[in-house]
Length: 189
Image (tube, rainbow, N blue to C red):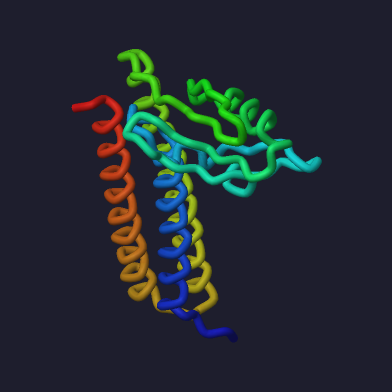
């Protein structure tokens, strides 16, 4: 009979939940707030060399000014595909091509667009919370299975379930804080 390792079980659950937090932070980082941020272009993929590649693998992205991004394309044959990919990304950016450099002025956000972005931030947060709840459910089922197999006692199961819930609550609070901060930043409040 295998021995149940409660510490490894908790560590695995926490690792999986933390990866959901990192995914949420990455998603939120890609939302435009009116300031230039290189993270804005992290999700842009470009069709080059017969494959879809992340923009960061075909160009250098910098923020030389508070309201301007600069994309320095390494291979001049990729300038048009990069321009096309940025326009198609739905970010509301219109690149200005200058040789192998694309300048991206960051326009002011309208109030409606701010509300849309805040709503999108909420959707990203909810998607991440669902992922955390799924990990929590897996953890609870694992504890019930271990108890049924006689690997842990019922008391130990209840204690470990309480610890899993504490981890879930802490991670959820971290997600709420990240989401609230991003919404505040987007709405300019």
